[in-house]
Amino acid sequence: MFSRHVTKDISAYCHGELSSDESKQFAEHIIACARCRTKYEEVKLGIKLAEQLPQLSAPDHLWRDLESLLERQNPSAPVRSPSWSWGVQVAAAAVVIMALGFAAWWFYHTPPVPNHQTNSTWRVTRLDGTPRIGSAGVSNDGRLGVGQWLETDATSRAQIAVGSIGDVEIDENTRVRLVANQPTEHRLELARGKMSARIWAPPRLFFVDTPSAVAADLGCAYTLEVNDDGGSLLRVTSGWVALQLKDRESIVPAGASCETRPGIGPGTPYFEDAPSVFREALQKIDFDDDAGSRRAALLTILAWARTRDTLTLWHLLPRFDGEDRVRVYEKMVALVPPPPHLDREAVLQLDEKQLESWKFSLESIWISGEKGSSKTAVDAYGKKRLSPKMKEMMPR
Image (cartoon, rainbow, N blue to C red; front, side, top):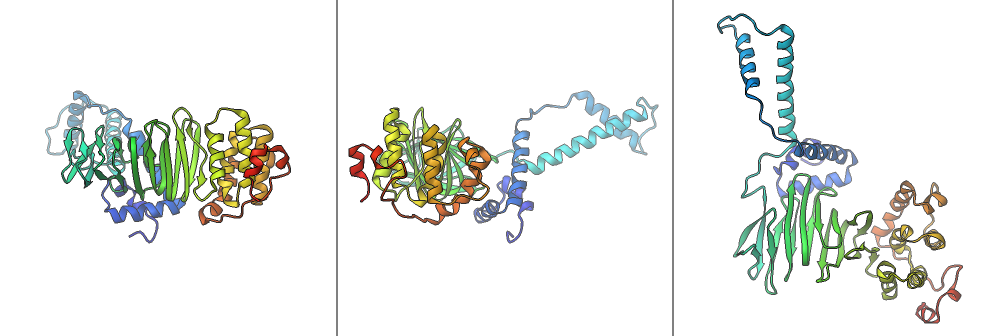
C-alpha cells in the first residue's frame, strides 16, 4: 500500500481511517518524501482554513427559489409563467454547482463530525496504581477529552494513545491535559512530572506545552520532564524535537538534550556524552545574566568542543554578538570545513538561508554520532585569556 507515493491516502490519514501500522508507514513515507510531504502540507493548510469558516444556515428563501427552479427543469411539472430570466437561472445553477463543489471539497479534506466517545477523546490505559481523569479513577481503560487533566500519584502510571500517530507514557507524580485533538494539531500540556513519547507522525503535528517552552515533534521518541519550578529537561532518543518559545528555538536530535527555564525558554542543545565541564559551562551561557561569566563559559565551550558539538556551536551563533560570535564561527570552521557556498559575512549577519544551509550540511555528523576528539588547547585567543581556575580545568 505504501511502496510508492501516498498522496491518495492523505484524506484517510487526516480522517483517522488508517490503522496504527498504516499510519506509521504513512508518516515514515511523508518524512522521507518531499513530494508527498508538500501535498500533505497543502491539505493540512486547507483543513486549518476550513476549520476557521463559520457554519451558517442558508436563508429560507434560497431553498424556495431552488425548489422552484428544479420544478421548471422537470418536464412533468405543471407549466407556469416564468418569473426568472434565463440569466438568473444560470446564476442560480452556478450557485448550486459551487455549493456542491465546496461540499465535496469539505467532505474530502475534513474529518467527519467526531464521536465523543472515540475520535474526540484519547484512550488512556492504566499501567500501575490508579491514575485519575478529573476526579474519576482509571481502573483499566479510560477516555481523556479536550480540556481534561490526567494525573498520577507516587504509585500510578498510565499510557495515552495519541490518536493514531503514537503513544505517550505518563510517569508517577505527573499532571497532563489534552489541549487540542484536530487533524492538523495534537497537543498536550505537561504541567509537572515526566512523560515519554513515541510519535510516528509528519513533522509538527504533535506538540507538548510546558511552563517554559513548547516541544514540537519532528518524528521521534523522547522524554520530557517538568520540575516544580516550571523548568524542563528534554532528552531525545530518536528523530528530532524542536523546543520553542516566541522567537527562540532549539533543534534537538537523537542523543542530545536541552534544558528550558521559565521566562527564558529553551537553552542550547548538547550531546549527553559531552564532558561535564562542557555542560556546566553551557548552563552558565544559557541561564547566567553576568556577561563576564558567560564570556568565560564560552571560552570553555570552545576549548572542549568536538566535531559533533558543532550542534551546540551552531545554536550559539545568534546568542552571541561581536567578537564572541566570530570566535564561535571560527571554531566551527576549524572543526568541520564549511560548504563552498557558505558566506562568512552572511553567517555573521545571521542570514537565515545561510544558517539553514550550514545546519543541513552538519546534520549527518550530528546524526551519525561522530564525536571527534577533545581539543587540548584553545584557539588563537589562547589559554592566556582564561582565568587560572579555568586553565586547571582544561584537558592536558
